[in-house]
Length: 192
Image 1: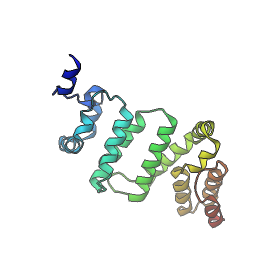
Image 2: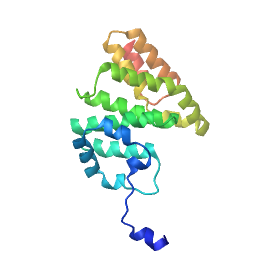
Image 3: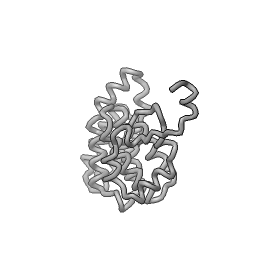
Image 4: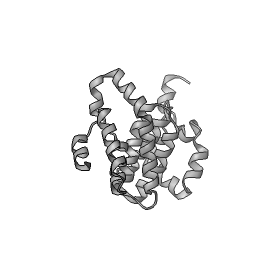
């Protein structure tokens, strides 16, 4: 095949097959959902020379999320869960957890929301916080102040609603001491 053939080739590479996501794809979605997702994201599914699974899943979820209906958010959530399981990169995990926590907290869609699930994702983000802080500080000490930490924020809010004031205060103080972006002084003052 010469260079010209590359431009006129009609063969399309199915990204799901290319990166070995077929089993997940088949089990995670119904045939109707798969057809719908593909129809709305045709170009994403046929990108050639593209082998980054995490970016593919993130883009796919983002495209669905922009529709902002319960159906779209539920499908996006399934994809984001797979994205979390597709990487060990701590910064990417941190960002994915931020997005999932934000989505769960803001919309509380009954098809995928539970306070236990939200709390679990907050805990998962908090568990990797020290590693993420270290990575961020190696790049730029001051940039930590630019990172929101939804895990600390939402978990503190949840503990406060449960009447667990001491736990909420401890969470907020930890977030402040680690220098995460947010109004931690105000939150701490309100809790005290």
